[in-house]
Image (tube, rainbow, N blue to C red):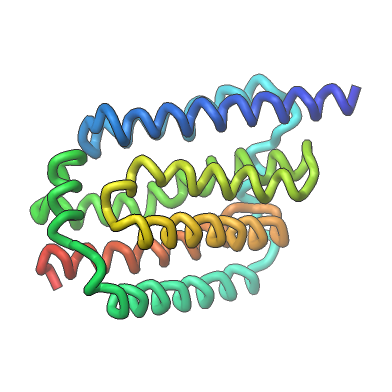
Length: 229
């Protein structure tokens, strides 16, 4: 009975993962509806659908994602997040001659309706809510669920690969192929680090803090790009 329950949860998580990533890829690459509508679709696929599955499947306990087991670990995650911020900003200044910010600005405007006028609002949403939404889906719903229903290798690799693939359609036209490949590798490795943080603490707070600081860094580059700072 226990094996059957685990198999059922595993199949459900995998099905939702594949369909949600596929759905968001279609939205990002083909439909390009603007950031507001895209955000609503993402909330449905990354939050509402998993919550419905969790409510129907007794083998997943959402409260486990949000238990604080170590305040010391949270402080360490903040320190790690600050380090990530410095690394990303440093990488930008080292590689900025290879990054076409004008092209990225055009893509954001044409595909997401993001411009200088609304960027700060979008940046705040991305940093705080969107990062939590992605952590709930990739590190909570996918990783922590697979960690309990499959083996450790599958949990790490599937969730990290899903996180990287999710960004492909969004970032494909942002950089040349070399930088794009580097970004995908960075996302995959970053996801593995996020998974490790959450495995140690069995919640999503630690990876959320680091993810938040990574977004702070990316949004700082955005502020530079738009001439706001």
